[in-house]
Image (cartoon, rainbow, N blue to C red; front, side):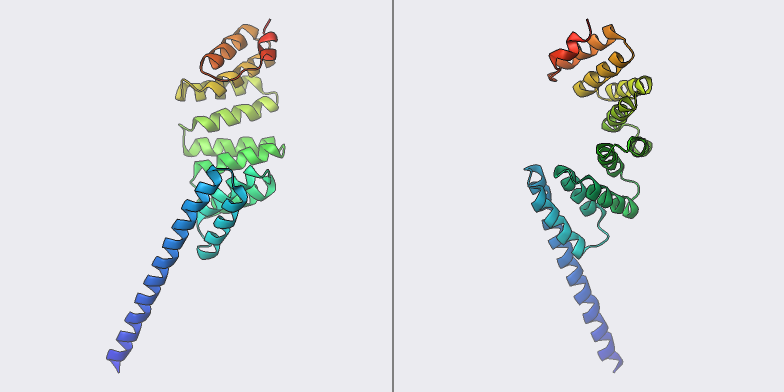
Length: 205
């Protein structure tokens, strides 16, 4: 009798291990497909695949994060924030989740919330140049140009050819009437291949 019980328990364990492996394999394939769909702009398809992953693995933070990214692609900012909230709750040490949630909050004009998220992303990864650039953008929207310039400068220190950060810093320099510095930034951004509107150059005169 004991032998039969042991065999039954072993069969149950093996079954669960096999089922778990099947679920993991299916979830991985769905995740790869969701990424591919996201990269070609099929955001609805990516959302559907991520939702299927979440049904299989309700605690898969990466699926919530990617679904949030796809919702941003559809400009569903509130839906994206809800997904980033879940991703962060499940795995609170992922800088990109805070950065992307900050972008979504910024779209909803929650600038203070956005700054807090970018700051948290930077705390988790002090080399996160994009988060510095994004925080600079948000501070510029709050007309906090001096602090924005500090953030853009750090982004440029981390990535010396960060053309967008040069352009953004130029705009912040214009905000405090430092036209020569702005001109230098716009010129550098253009040299790096960034499209700087002529109107910005004109404002430096």
